Length: 315
Image (cartoon, rainbow, N blue to C red; front, side, top):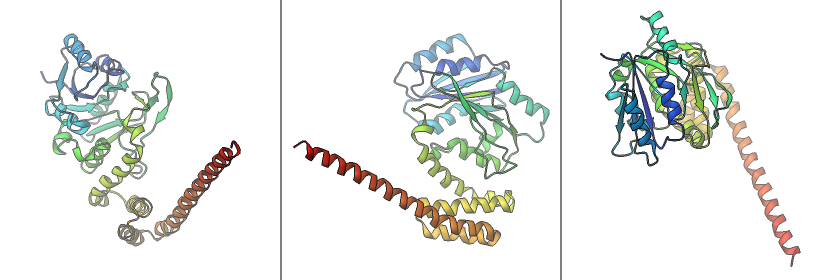
């Protein structure tokens, strides 16, 4: 019998929290699933923990990578063996509420013809499991520009994964966002504005904490690659906001005048108001950056001078 849902859980040195993550899967009120855990060459005691769980529950399968593949390729390896009608994946430091799978699955059963992917918000926790807040991802159909992706709690038809050829290894750090943008161009999403189905752990070692600037940079690059499809799918106002985003990015972050001019021209053609906002914003922001750098430099100079004078006074 094929399971209804396939959950892939990639892990690398996840022994600190992985028991909580696995237990949250096994304690789901909806039990017809398989849990495929991909161990990406962990050097801690993750492997022994996985062996222990695999012996206790037949729904668990463990795959061990021979070489460290990173997240996108580990996800793809897990889903290559998945047999479920619906796919999802979770992380070794996060966990589900007991009714998460059933709640999302209900959306498919209530709307079989139009729903291809369901996603929700989540609750933020710290290392100790204390609740620190929530993260809202917004309804993509209300505003793509304000949409933050599908987060970490989602369920989608297996056919989506196959049609998109899985997760893009080149999109490391934003492999999930890239996947969801590509899926949005072809499939129907269903947003559940709940925050109580998934608990996302924010801590110093997480990729979102250590690579936040790189994530923002890469996300712009891969979003630009999907611009042709987005121009066809989104309304004029949303397209204008994307042009504005790219114009500012290339002007401020990359100092790429050619790309800045390109998107400013595109923006002017559909929204002179947004183009004017951009033309005013870019030099103002650059001036702010320049003043900020100068101020930090001046403060550093004063500190060095104070230290020098202090050292002289001792002699």
